[in-house]
Length: 260
Image (cartoon, rainbow, N blue to C red; front, side, top):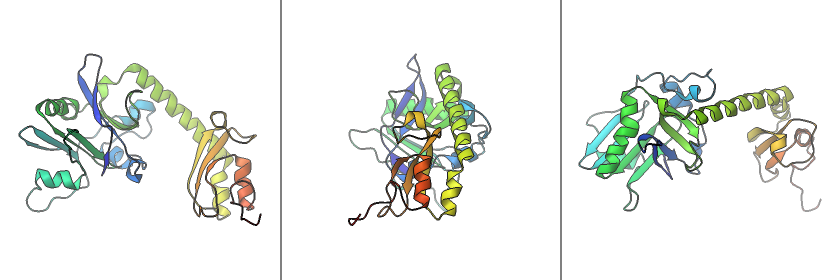
């Protein structure tokens, strides 16, 4: 797992701890999604919106470590232990969970694991209420996004029964919109056309054309292209028409040589 930033406890309107916002960092481990966590926790891949994020299988346990006014909580279903259990200091080092003098809370995560380290009596109490108790109650949801505007986007751990109704509605609407976008993109079939033409890319992500400023297009979808061979190809938002031009090595995607 990799260290994240802007992590903090989530509280409800009564100032009761109901979860933890991990935040994120500009690292690939925070861009791969959480398929490993979803699988380990038995989340329903066919559910819509927030229901898709609810943990339904707790066959793997939280790993909890305490000393004085310090606590670490880890979820590592693929980790194996041999011999003596590692010390807290080793766990902190291995999982990028160092707390600095002015930062008594540290967190890290990736697609299949997460960890939290806190220092201070009050933070230990908060961690137990926000994470350990919901886990023991089998009342957990995990998703990547933004809980509310004041929280940074990243991994969210939440007591599922405390999810506000407006958040549930927003997640449902966003998920249905995403499904519609994917269907519109699949109908266009530009991914396969580019692959057949030998055009390689790291990402070709659809967006609704109405939400992005690009050239005019007759299609409802445009694409964020992150191509391989960026010494000869440009990245950015492109229309389907421009992507088709790329197949013939023309248009705005191929970089122009100094002689052109």
